[in-house]
Amino acid sequence: MRKKVTVVGGGFVGATTAQRIADDGLADVVLTDILEGVPAGKGLDMLEAMPILGSDARVQGISTQNGDYGPTANSDIVVITAGFPRKPGMSRDDLLKANYAVVKQATEGVAKLSPHAILILVTNPLDVMAQTALRASGFPKNRVIGMAGVLDSARMRAFIAMELGVSVENVHASVLGGHGDDMVPLPRYSTVAGIPLPELLSQERIDAIVQRTRKGGGEIVALLKTGSAYYAPSAAVYEMVRAILGDRKMILPCAAYLEGEYGINGLFMGVPAKLGSDGIEKIIEIKLAADEQAALEKSAAAVRQMVETLGI
Image 1 (cartoon, rainbow, N blue to C red):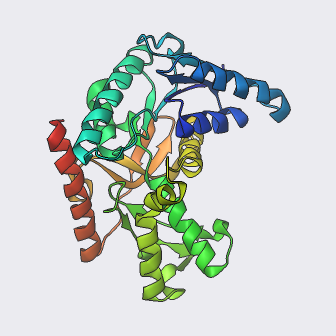
Image 2 (spheres, rainbow, N blue to C red):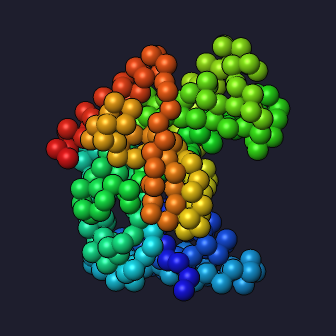
């Protein structure tokens, strides 16, 4: 039987994620949104592309305006992208509370019908929304994962490849911490064809790449004027889904719930994790220098403040 993936939220990130999964024939896809017609129209459009692409994936779009998540039942993976973008005049706390309500409701709706699913959270603020889903679903921590590190590392890899004029396939980058300005790119653990980055670039150029990585999402928002990134985020989700459905045991940077790892307890943080059919099968702990550990703790403090604001 073909696997089934539900994508909650039919905006740019959600629809592009659904398209990538269906195009590759990874799974049948259910795309949901609170709007009437829009998810059904996008789903039908994707379905009609399958014969051209040679994929037998079935795509269905549904509205959950009345709270009915019926067609999502027995999903293997549920990707939650639904939420509000930050608007002019909206404080960070306003956005936090608005998206908390959206993610909590969506999680409760899908978790009842797919009790064995793995949840992948994309809605921002990412780490806090993952914690929201963990509490709302009652799922074990290995089956609730935040998508952030794959995206942040991909951005860093792209910038390194551009700087050195090499293939992105030669570049590996490591980024820890929360998904925001306090993320922790690790040049020491970033390599080009196995060569540590500090041996290839000056500290000045490395610092510039680290800063651009931290501001990667904001750079795109500033260029677009309205809206935010969706091609790279959807590609990051696709890679995670592929690793889980294929039981590939890939080590990818993900937001995982930590219980003492890296000296952090009771929070979602971006760390290297082995992804397979059980979700997060192992958290990989690497040795950090004092300044790297301090940066990770600063990132954790920012996430903890938001978690405390919501009381979760």
